Length: 142
Length: 142
Length: 142
Length: 142
Image (tube, rainbow over all chains, first blue to last red):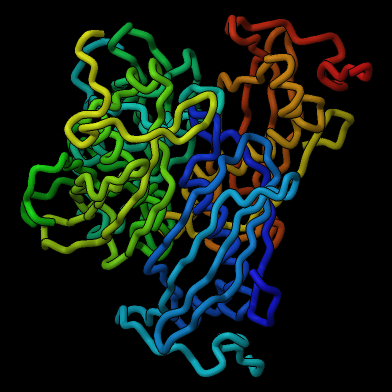
């Protein structure tokens, strides 16, 4: 990913037994748990904190995950999950991820996720606010 | 477990990759997932269906798990989870479980769980209804 | 999905508490656990049993998951996971899935996964055997 | 837990969506995942690193978990998992845990786990080395 001004995040995780399976590699579901943690931290940084969501009842909802598994991770690996806001349209936004093992530079997985903002309790998809990429609904008066 | 008249359940599961870890055995958390499924099926049988809980807002809540891991399970094992209502007091009930591999009769884990009934939204522990063990809150008039 | 002669599978699951999250819907990871169970059952049906894999050390390995989340599932929902072998190339095969709630016919998720066969311990991708779609490596002489 | 000289660990976690369930609380299994991470970090600190285990094939294996759920955790909570080596006998050791929410000092769960050291591939329980509590099998010559 090129360095640019889009909101981005780096999260770290060490692979635990519960992340692995009997093939002695990181299980495919574990990568998506790592990515969800990174995505949540990115959302918080963009203004979509748990408190903001609870107050506004505007929830970011995952509508698509496209993940490619490239190299196997192993027990004990220290991994870096790099996320960056990708394409933004009227009512959808994307986040691009790489799961990297810094020890040898291996890219274990790449992933793109698509999300929408849903207004609860109606469950209606809403348009992304203007300036979404520069901070979602940050209201400094509160 | 002796055969007796207490409410009981038998659930079946085959061990999948996501149930195992890099030590090539069933991960300790997976047994508790198997047990939760069996416990939920037993609760439904006793009258605590998802619909009943949603309507009454009386929720069975886990207050303690005591599980002993005795023998390792392996990928592909077909397991039987046997649950039975145990001790019942004024405000707590217990469920006893065994996780068995019928192919060789091995007992992989034994577990006792303690639960309470909580009235939401107050969050107050309530007394178990009379005749709890013979069918929780089944009200044929509704 | 049209009815045709490709290998296919239907698996059933009831949504448990551990499948849901605080938004009161089925968590995105849970669908992929449901799908993995269906995929494993399909693999067994096609000849890739746990025993066959252990003996040959030829492992089906997930290389891509593309899942679209269409409608929310809820606690207690009874779901059907329908899987069918999709495109097959020299060294990759695809499986197409739908997660359906028969009670109202809602399609909650659609998913395509890509897999390769890996020969361990070398970790080399191997060509799919001729007639792969009609039964993987079934060798009646053993 | 009293302050003393036994090996101890503090781990931190923020509650994610995948840690919660449809009752809007932290799911009972999630606490045990948090505790496993803390236990693994404590094991590493005591000399049982992933590398040491792989080299010696002496594995710490969980033989019992006794966990009491005291107060519900919520989405977004920042939690502290405090672990400390407990009773040590000839062939078993215990680790005591508390899961605490520093924001209000609530103790959400307390847990005791029992472990044994298993020599693979034989699968035999071995005696704990002398001075176990002061550093497991640390061999400075390697």
